[in-house]
Image: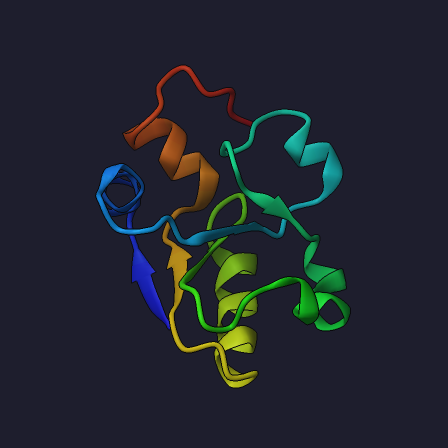
Length: 106
């Protein structure tokens, strides 16, 4: 598992390589406020039962509000055999401040 900051993730998403899986582990009410386009929503508590919904061969970027929950999920995925796991350092809040100033924050 490695950390990626919002600017690095923006460059990855805008690059030529296939897009990674974006996994948002926040609660549904948080997604009602803001979200990254194309992110798959699986709340943190559902991750163990939803591993089959993710491709362990593709890179996955885990996202939460500030990067704490997503780091825990990223470590879990790493221990489950996912080889290319990235945690969005600072979470969606950092994304809003560093990449998308129009995104709502909470």
